[in-house]
Length: 144
Image (cartoon, rainbow, N blue to C red; front, side, top):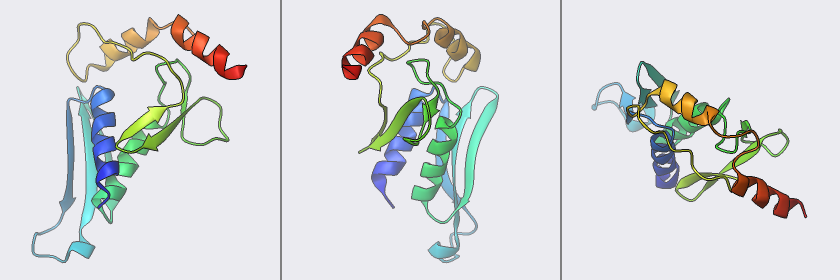
């Protein structure tokens, strides 16, 4: 098991407002470890994002991280991408964290309970297109 990937997935789910995170395997404790099917779940209010049927906890965590990031919007308001060939804000696994390529400040979600997608969406709607002033200045410096 690659601890960094599992910890990074846990951290990502937490940063994305998950109310809960679980990683485990199906089957009996008596069956051989290589036959176990692993899953990872992030729980939000009224929703569960699941990655299952994997051969290891590392693969389950990586699968869940990809599900959480695919189609997501970065705090700089750009779509998240996991590939250099795609437009948007490139996210990479750096040690025990998934990190964006932008310098935008984290988005704070006032009010709302943990995992409240409506509160998260409302907070993201308050971020101006192209990110906040600090992130626009940082992007301008990078282009020079």
